[in-house]
Length: 156
Picture: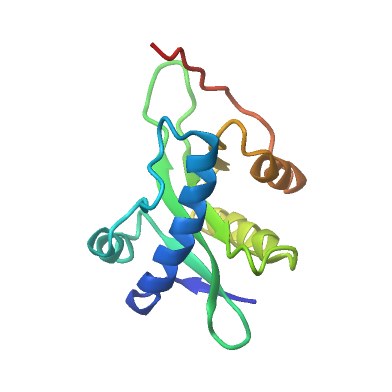
């Protein structure tokens, strides 16, 4: 698999993959996610793809077809008197096409993001996983990730 920064020509395929992820989340939390939608529009993706603080990487097969992506956000820990300042690369979304799973594409994307984070001088790579998305949680644990904090809710 080849991994590179996403380009405008990738937008339609990225939207298809975003739809796959949305449907997973809509099954888990239909009270929050709306089936049949995507996280971003074409216009929003066009803006994101040129933002160096929000790099998007795509993995392509040997024919050049996009089979996965990693949406990232470069973040700086805000200064406080109680925390050490640091940079992190937040994985906002990582997806491998459901038909391409099991071939280590997700691992390759994740490893690529780790290397990019090192290159950018980051202290960590972090992300959130929705409760109930056990396959994603298991994948990230296999990649060596550990729970840092837990976000909780009380639905009214």
